[in-house]
Length: 53
Image 1 (cartoon, rainbow, N blue to C red):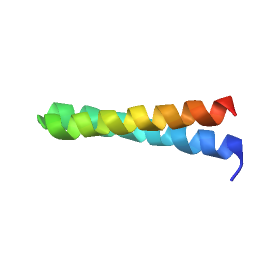
Image 2 (image 1 turned 90 degrees about the vertical axis):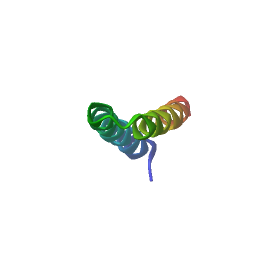
Image 3 (image 1 turned 90 degrees about the horizontal axis):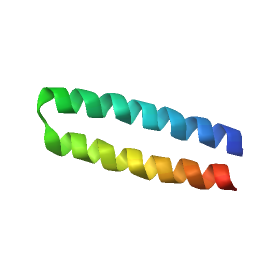
């Protein structure tokens, strides 16, 4: 998989997790919201690592 496609996949993953985080927070599920936040941070770090290379 090339670098451009990986960046797109990470960006889509971050966006989907942001939507899930918002819905979890609105639903009153803080544990799920925190989990989605942690996954977003992980995907953001991976996106940064791919874009640096």
